[in-house]
Image (tube, rainbow, N blue to C red):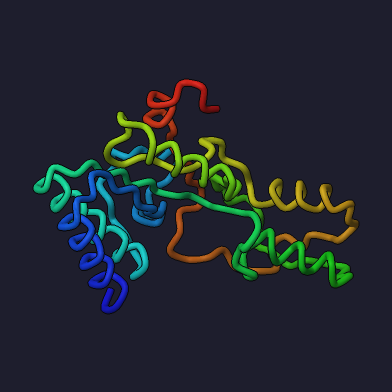
Length: 197
């Protein structure tokens, strides 16, 4: 809020002054706050942490400044990314590290929370499509549109790595400040790209 946000606003203003015609930016599903269920882009944002507040503030600035300057803009609210380069504390990366270390057990929450996971390669494709599609404008969700429980997601990784590690459900508390079950409504993106599934 104090460093990155003002710097990004200055960057965007500089780009516009130098002739930029289209801007594609990654937002976050955390802008939705604690809404539950299938999340639509038309929901009023209500971010409840500083990261999401900064993103939401930037989106509002972009909407205003780009509309004023007649610049097309796309804001993709990314849900839960996984893949190469992932944070070492993220669920899959932590599990993968535990398996590689030969751990017998892996502590996790109750595992019933539902999230919308999408591989980083798919998000990259969305961003490229948004940049190159003249009809892409405004806010889009960046997810799979398919909720999956954390326990099922962990089991998939365990199976993929042919591991016998025991998943210890309930060993960790459910993280506060997040909805228990939330996933992306992808209808707006599918209308832009009918082949997307």
